[in-house]
Image (cartoon, rainbow, N blue to C red; front, side, top):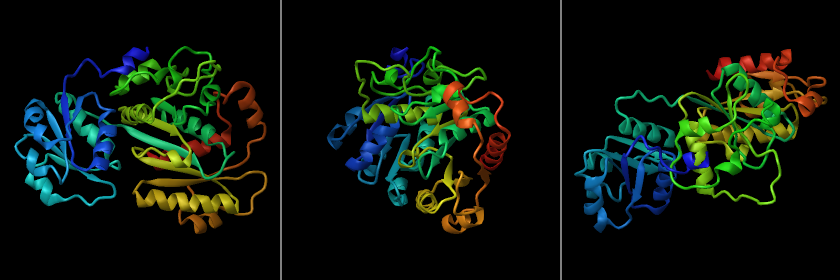
Length: 348
């Protein structure tokens, strides 16, 4: 199972050359390319371009190397986030398209996938992230409810160490890959292979979560490997829901749902998070979580965060105990189902 994810998919021999001069941008390009199914080569010395470029199906370049790759028929021009794109340089190399990375890594991967399989219509699907501006708001529970309402294909716990999604979805005993199982291997990860390797819920949602059983051997996962897996997950051509902390929201997420308590500190943190997401830019919505004590109401939250809440979730009596003992019930509590429906109507 791990072997299927450790190498590029055998269906393509698409060769991509990273010929980027700026070292920071080159690292971002390599991170994005790792999630593709291409055979990737990075060429740092311009003197080697003439040897590698003729063998490449596509080339990634930047303003420092634009003139050196101008003869290649398929060049993707890259600029470092937040931009701007040097369109004069992009025109110089007759770029097929230009992207700002990492903000547009998903679009870049989609273009590369279209090149690798030109006869196939490529759909990058819809990736939704759910996070909380404070702890204990039930972001994981809301993520599962949203995944059910959306008929999601994939549900991802962004942290390989947090655990919990398997219990929430009732698959803790089902066979399939968990985060530690994916640590081995390097290079690209095929999104379809990833989803096939995961355990799935009774309604067909593949779930990537931490391992339930403790192991004497701690499996270390490199940051590059984790990034490749996350990018492959977000590229899956279907609906993907990611449960993530606020400091680890995927750049590839099409929409971010931010839960906040109706409390001053949580609302202040939510305001900062909303401002950061809008600056990326990344679409986001706010959901108010009313705990047993609340110092603010929805209108106060709107004033503080400059975002009108799209839903309010009350405390649901007995839900915490039910989740702890038997997972999230198949028939969602009415209030939670209503919030999931309201979220889906906005983000879809």
